Image (cartoon, one colour):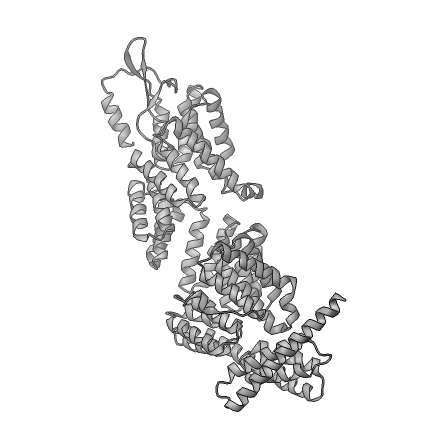
Length: 638
């Protein structure tokens, strides 16, 4: 039995006991805490003013049920509370306890009915208000789409109910704990911590409160503090499955896989239907290279709770690492069917669509993410990356004045306005402007300070055809990678944007790590395939140009540029062919000038005489384009 109960019984040993029925809860004051069950459903004492003699009425079933609640034996507690209610139908303590036992077992409709019954008789029953808050919070674990759609409203109502109970009686550990859970679900971690700490202060032996504190510390990345809190929770109640899960999850975050699995197995033994435990076990197996076991755990998590994005993301990553991108996308889309607004799933579909060169699909997914999270730098980079690839593939100036491209610019401009200090967003903005031919000065964004910013900076340089500077940035990123996973990530990105030199260098480094040779070979084969495809398209483009099949030649030049943008001859041949196209159009001259600039950038050892000649030609082309634009506008106006 709880030590508070023992101390209370000892203190009351000289006081006469009167019957087994409860006192009026309006006159009653709780003594002791029932921990997980709450602090107001246990022993009650009341003063009878009529005879000035303290009388204590103890409901033995309630006391025993409270103790069972402390031990997490909610089913047994339910039976005892029910017996107490049958013995005394007016017992608020028994009914509240019964509701709490039902709520802990997620028998939420029954729990709600009990709390509402208590509040009908006594609207100021603090524990009943706290119980209703718990019911509302627990409903969010449901897979019901209506409940999920109304998540924010439900959390707000639960918060109000918990605060109403605490306004009546601020000394309820359970209510503070429930409020902490609500705050945590809302992302208000500091307020959640305050609530958990208050629950601990009111009941220093409240295991769940320490587990809550541990979860907040873990979410904040304070792993040492999280471990301390979780261990305290386990010391107070070894049957606290949440504490064992949290401890396992924290060990996983620290790379202590064996210790993590031990705690997670304990948690799973105590609570067989825990999707979070299954997900973490899957992530550990995945990190250990046991992908079959990992997929099994992720599948089990989905069967327990279909709305768990981490499971779909985990399976998709395993499929991706095997080179099966189509199946990876299919897994993610299964998750999207259940969670249509989940930005993490949409972002990953965008990433994989880019790798498959499904550029329109990628643009659609990234746009959805940015509509919901304008500050998402990764999605902004993905969107501009897709447009960069599309520009190289289509290479028509009409594309840059399309409504689609203008919408993308407005979306990125909005994101930058909301997050002006986000360097990746600002680089994405400049990249789009550079692609559309606007003058851009990358010096305005400052110097990259981390690898994410260096990658974004390099992509912005590529959009300006500044290939050497881009290569310098990406070389730093490759040098900074510390393991095969990080190096493959850089290699895959470089391959995706067709920076084949960088991709080759990264795959070579990745292949030097243990057990990474096969994947590195697969990547090198893809690089070689892209080079060969570009070479073949260049050869065919040259033949078509000689036969004066200029439109077909330009299509093949574009295909060659798309597969390998760093071949000088391709840029030169495309520029020459664009000059020959008839009827003359400003867009042809603009693009020809751009291709000559790319040729110069890719040919650092050009003789001075030839360089001067090319720069003169570029100036002439831009002047012709400007004059034609004026005429085209006049004709359009007429």
